[in-house]
Amino acid sequence: MPTTPPSGSTSRLVAFWLPLALSWLMMSLAQPIVAAGIGRLANAEVHLAAYGVTLDLAVLIESPIIMLFSASVALTKDEATYRLLRRFMLIFAVGLTALFAVVAFTPLADAVLSGLIGVPPAVAAEARTALRWLLPWVPAIAWRRFYQGPLLRADMPRWIGYGTAFRLAALAGAVVAGTAAGLPGATMGAIALSASVVVEALVVTVWALPVVRALPAGARETLTMGDVARFYVPLATTDVMRVVSRPIVTAGVARAALPDISLAAWPVTSGFVHLLTAAVMAFQEMVVAVRDTAGYRAVARFVTRTGVIFSAVLALVAFTPLADVYVVRILQLSAPLRDAVVTALRTLVALPALLALRNLFRGALIAGRRTARVQQAMAGNLVTLAVVLIVGAAAAVPGIVLAAWATLIAQAAEVALLVAFLRMDPSPGVSLPEAAGR
Image (cartoon, rainbow, N blue to C red):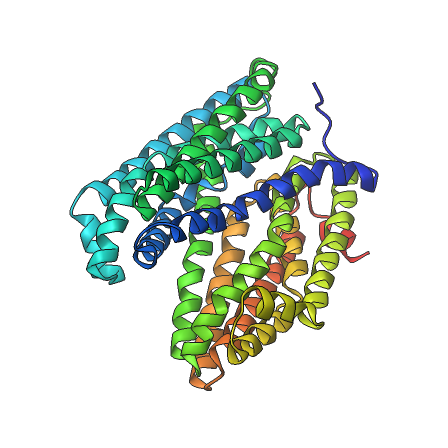
């Protein structure tokens, strides 16, 4: 069983990164698959709206567990730390599942859906039912993120990619079955999501158990539950802030100039950029998995160059007729929407490279157990985002332009803070900024 972290040649790094990148890409395809299924059922508009609201609320509740993958990669070194982190994961998952159940199965659901969010009654009714079917989603995600860690530490990233393939196949199968059965669209989507993640959690566990059983007995270091909490809580809040940033951008766009066109164009823009940058999201765990300075330097060069390549791909689309192929021929957007989307895409050309660097430097800090610094950098991102949106809205900047620039500037601010923190705090990844600059 391989236990060597990625380092050295570019081909070796690509072989390690590619399964993780494909896993992120496959996950980004899940929502279009569900939306396609809902679109073929009765009352599609109401159910698409209900499904979207349900998913947004579910993502907010489960966001604190997303970083369990990075935590598991960083901490699962021996049998003792594995058992400690598993206990922490279970406590965390049970707590979030209980919170989810309270929201989904009590009058709080109506208070949130109809009162706080303000969705129409028909949408709220379908969203309430769908939310209940998503209850298994939270613990299943926590479980599979935890067990992905030992696989990556053992240099087995392809099994993580295989797990996501199983998830996507289960999702597609559930969507086809639910559509054939004529289930309500939002409910069908929720069932498909829950079933797919449960399937992935099961197969990942089966593959990870031999790795876990091969972990060294005893403890290489003494950790307590408090140590784990101090390491992980900043990561949990980091992802909560990431999720919160989305409605902040939407609120800023709604208050800027040309809100109608901008609100329609921004989801198209951000959706395309999200799909293009899915692969660079794998860099964080890749960096955490590297456990020697030479490996960090090699990964830093690889991540930097790959980020530049993805920015070049975005530029190729944004500044050539390829943009019209996607925006006009495929999506069939009107001329005003086309212009807004293309303008935003051109503004965001540097974003893939910035996201690659962000995940590179985040990974270095997580490996060095400086997770509070990751949280602080994300807080800087959020504050910068809010300030740019407020100033831009007051200056009557068009909403789509404001959203793009605010996103780009906020991300640049986060990267700058991460670099500063790496240079301030000695850690195994302290050489990354220098390596990335070569």
